[in-house]
Length: 634
Image 1: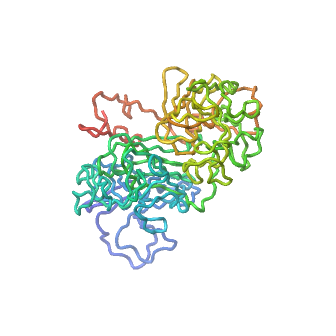
Image 2: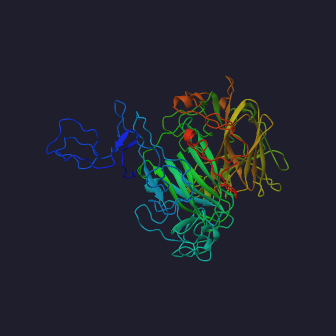
Image 3: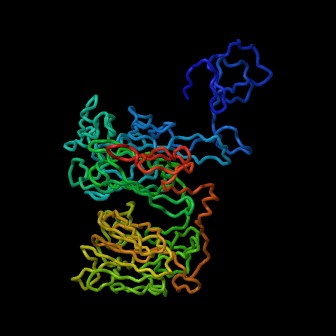
């Protein structure tokens, strides 16, 4: 806080800040009574001489909660000095100089930092803010441009990097000081002082994406098998997987993003229900050679995916980690299925052919309930009566008593069961590099990859290739249709196998007949296994639109089967997990809905007005928009 000298004292939040030194000379011995001005530091002993200048009270939070309410403010929960923007009030223009993080803030702060004067009754969770700029490894060793990277930050931070859509399934480092022929990824821009190799209007001085600070090494998706790093002009996905979850992801830096076809998807654990949730943010690119910072500010993150709509790069990511990755203890999470069956299932009433819901940690096996719904794991290896399904069979109404009917495109009109343990190649399981190995092959399913395929998937659903008598997935893809009866109250997830590229989608038709929801699936590569979160209630119909050879592994639903449970899901001793609305109040949270028809004080808004900070003081958020006329939405 910079308090300029003046003629009078300044009162800031109840603290009297004198503008001039004290007029009376200091005494030669301690006073017998407390002074009216607080000292700058705490002391266990009385001072032997007074300070010559008045000090300002520095509030320092305790690491252990006190028994009584503190008069000092609690520690701020806003990001630390590692985060580029540290302004107390959001700026309206980008900063002209880099922050302490070494990366300039090219966008105004979305939420101003707030200092709370309400005492806290519990210690603040401790985590370490880290900015990974891909110029150095955790041990400070410089990285090398042209290297492919994946596990370099795992031991220190639990971070795994992967890529999809280009030559390899891991990203590559590109040295922006030597970008070769791709000047869009050069840094600094050639118009800066001093100039650099970068070229593009988005990065020239004075633009929102000004690129005058050297960016060093950045992450790209390699386009082809070439010795020279080159970003994929068709885009793709760079994934950041955190094991365990990152306490928070604050910011991510991007470069050379054009248009609005790029987005960022964050997979995070809902703090109330404990169920994984996906949040997607559309990125408005600042143009060729521009650098920009995208605020994330989401806690408990398991994965972040940068879905590049064309050429582009990631310059840095800023996170808060609870402790070192390699030495982190195992974190117990609420029950939610893994994308593949566990290798050592817990004791269960389920038949052995069905995957267990949790690992052998002493936690109960399925079924269990969320919001009163019975969670049912529909795997296509086991029928509802507990018997094994038959590979090669066409299937439709076998799971009807669970509320599911199947159909598919193709000559037969039904999906076919494929035994992955008898198939080599992209739809074999486990992957050939796992221990024990299996018939599957493909980088997407290798151990350590996000789509790791090291547990046998047994039978899966495919769209049958028309000219084959044996089970074989159609090379051009097709549609698998799931029809749900009224007993299916919610669809939680769909697990897919062998999805590559961007063309596969999942379309959900709501039971009210008025709405549809489409989810674009970014495949994790050849032979990969991935779970797509749905979390939609009252689903009448769900279409898996496969853009190539692929399969459906299992589906998670919430249903109300009453006491008439199929043999395969006989109840066990299971916990009741509630995620109802009342928990918002129990957690001290308020649920607020904005429809933009009224301001925070209830005053009606006016059509035609540009709005930005109307709700800032009351609720802590401001609005901005792209456009030629105004940076505020109308």
